[in-house]
Each structure stands twice: as structure tokens, then as C-alpha cells.
Amino acid sequence: MKPLVAPGPELTPAQRDRWSRHLLLPEIGELGQRRLLAARVLVVGAGGLGSPALLYLAAAGVGTIGVVDDDVVEESNLQRQVLHGTADVGRRKVDSAADAVARLDPSITVVRHAERLTAATAAEVVAGYDLVLDGSDTFETRYLVNDTLVAAGRPWVWGAVLRFDGHVSVFDPEGATYRDLFPTPPPPGSVPSCGEAGVLGGVCAAVASVMVTEAVKLITGAGRSLAGRVLVHDALAMTWRELPLRPDPRRAAPGSDLLPTVSADDLVRELADGGRTVVDVREPDEHAAGAVPGAVLLPLADVLADPGRVPAGPVVLHCARGGRSAEALRAVLAAGRTDVVHLEGGFAAWCAAGGPVV
Image 1 (spheres, rainbow, N blue to C red):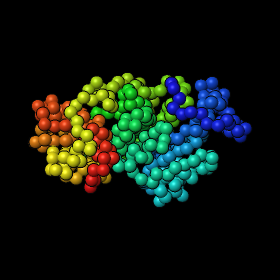
Image 2 (image 1 turned 90 degrees about the horizontal axis):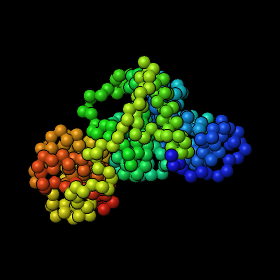
Image 3 (image 1 turned 180 degrees about the vertical axis):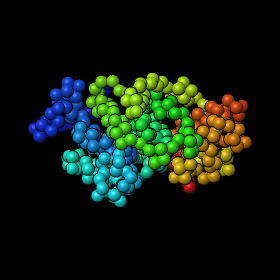
Image 4 (image 1 turned 135 degrees about the horizontal axis):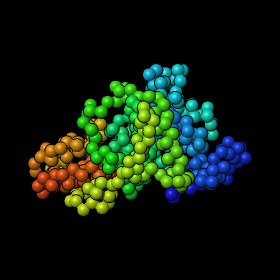
């Protein structure tokens, strides 16, 4: 693989001693360790997956680690979130995480993002990092991370756990992405959370260790990544299965879509003159964080289930950056509509064009 990160300065004698076991590995060596020290990695979530991932990233010598989490430590977290201790209950997870990393290696820089990623902030937050590891526990965040990094043209590492099961993969905008594995979010309430169904702490550690291994490989260029493959872990049977994952040919590559579009600049002018109806196909939390004035919320899953729900008359569909609205538009056009387009560049382009936001 081509390494994601250029190597940093020469190692000091103390650094050679600290990471001597890495230097013995030909696939990493001193050059790979310099890449790790120069790397900037963002971990989404400091919970069951983020906790061991943050510790192993720091131990590996990743020089700058960002952590995104708006939650505080609760006693029920301690069964699996090994980053935190009893004394941390009630503290912000980002603060507890930063302290834990500092105890392990005070030379590591930790950037605290005490917030929940939203459509309005995601692009700005991830922009400063070479790689993202997503250990979040909501589908909304996973789709947001995917769509943000597809738009940015960067890979990311995904992990998920529930009960005794885990899943891990690497998603590449030039290959298969999270939307090829799960094209649309499941209906609300159809998939239980760990708080409802439980999770074995050791499963979190197993999945997180694979996530960090993939991160180290991507940063240094060692081995073959999990891109195009999904690992499925069953702790009760103690098995790991590998499933192939290929891009869905119905999902157009970024920039390749020939569907009818409208530019953000043109739409700003049209709406000022009382133009077309705007339909927002994002998720409710994205819409609530910022929306085009007067836009009708109709999530992508609802459009795909029944394209007839799209209002009559000239319509502009939009999402965060154009991927989901293109998918929605295909469904609407297949249903026979000819008066629907989608917003090129999505809500991000609308904001960049100076469109009003509510």
C-alpha cells in the first residue's frame, strides 16, 4: 500500500528505545515509526471501541490523536471502556481520555473535541486529520462519517460491536464504502443498542485492536488493508469470517453522476424568487442542526421506500454533499418523475454559496 503519511524527523535515541519492537519489524522499521509519529488520527467516540483504540494508538506512537465525544463517564461504562476509571465517573470522556494517554506517553498530543459530530461541523473537524477511526454507536454518526470522508476522498476505519459479535472494515472512497455495506439506515428502533442488548467487554478490545492494526498499516503502508473486505467476529464460537465487499454499481462515484443538478448559486437565486420546493433527504438530526429555509424533511430511506412521497411540482433534492440526493433522485426518476433535480454539492455547497440557514 502507499503510506498515508510522510515520515517525520529522525528518531531520537529515547524514541528508538521506546519503539524498539516496531523497529525490529521490517514492514514498519524506523521509517514507519517516523510516519506514525507524524500522523494525525481522529477517533470518533471514547467508549467501548474508542477506549482501547486510543490506548493502542498512543502506545504505537501516533503523534497527534483527536478524540470526539460529547458524553461523560458513567459507572456502567467501566465494564468495557477501559480508558476510564472509577475516579473518572462524571468527567467528560475527552478529558479522561487525554489524561489516560498522557499517563501512557506525555509526548503524544491529544486534541479534545467535546462535541457530537453534525453535518454542520463534520467536514471541519475531520479536515485536520490523516485518518479517522469510527467507534461510534449510532447509525447517524456512521453515515455522517462515511459521507464526509467520501466527499473528502479519504479512507476510514470502521468498527461495531453488539452482544458477542463485532464487525471491522476499511472504507475507501475509490472502492467500497459504508453505504455499499448498508445502503440506508435501518428503521428507528429496529436494531437494539448496547445499552439495550448488552456487549461483552472483550469483544470491544478484539475489534478495537484490529481497527488500530489497520490504522498502523494504512499510515505506514505495511501489508494489505481490509478495504473491500469485512471481518465478522463471533466471540461465542470464537471465529472470524471474511466477507467480500464491492462497490454497488448503482452508487455513482463522486463526480461521475450525470443526473440533472442545480448549482447552489442558482438555487439561492431561484428560492429568493419563490422557485422550486426543496426536499432534504438527510437524517432528522442533520436537518435539525442546520437546514435550507422551508425545506421539507424526507429521509433517503423514506424516498427509496416510496418515491411517491416526494411533493408534486418542481423539486430540488439535497443531502449533505450530493451522494444521498443522487440516490434519491434515481429512485424518483425511475418512478416516472421528470421535474426533479438534486443540489450539486449538497448542503455544504449551499452554505458555501451564502445561502440562508435555519
